[in-house]
Image (cartoon, rainbow, N blue to C red; front, side):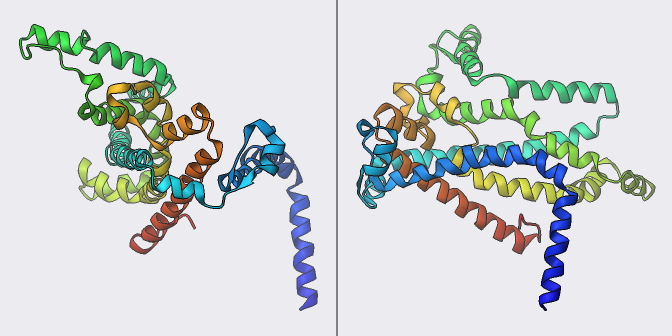
Length: 316
C-alpha cells in the first residue's frame, strides 16, 4: 500500500514537472484571482459588524463593534429591500424567458443561411450592440420614447393619440423597455456559444438526414437541437444562477431610473449601491450583498440538481 501511494505521488510530481510551462502561464491568472476575487471576501466579515469608516480602513475592519445578525434582521424587515428583491427576480426571469430562447433561435436561423458572406455580415452586425455603452443606449431610449420623442411624434401625426404617452415616467412601461433594450443589446453576443456549438456538429449527421429525406425543420429538430442540448443545459444552469445577479443590469436600471419610476427600477444592485455608497452604511450593504451571493449559490445547486435528474446533464 505504501509503495503504491509513493508511486502515485511520484507520478503526480512528474506530471506537474511535465506541465511546468503551462502552469507558469496560468500562474498570473491564479494570483490575480486570489488577490482580487478571494482576498476581498475577507471583507464579508463586516456584515456582522457595525463598520465605522472614521477608524480608517484596517482599524475599522478589525475594531468595529460586533453586532451579530442585526444587519440581516434589519434587511428582512425593510420593505425597500423586498421591493428590490422582487424587481431583481422579476426582470431576471423576464430576461431569461425572452432572451435565452431568442439567442438559440437566432443561432439556428443563422446556421441555415447558405450564403457565407451574408451569414458573417449578419453575425457581425448582431454583435455590435453589445459593445455600445448603456449610457448611449439609455440616451437613445430617451430620444425615442420621450414626450417629444420619435414614437409620440409619429402617433400624434397619425392621430392615434391626442396627447403624448409618458413612457419614461410610467411604471407599467418599465418591464417592456428593460427587456427589449436588453434583448437588442445582448442577443447577438449570447448566441456566440450556440453558434460555436452548431458549427462543431458533425456534417455527416446533416448529410445522413438529407439522404433520409429530412427537411430543414426536421434537421433542426432531430440533429441540431439534440447536438447542442448539453450546451443549452449548461448555459441555462448558469443563467438561473444569475437570476440574483441581474445579468449586470446595474447600469441599465440606474440610468433608466427617475423619481416617478424609482420603485419599478430598484433592483438589488442599485439598492446596495445607494445604501452602501450614498448612505455610507457599509455593513448593511455587505449583508445585502452576502445574502444575494448565498441565494445565487443555492439557485446554482438547485438548477444543477434538477437538470441532472431530468436530462442527465450537469455542471458537476
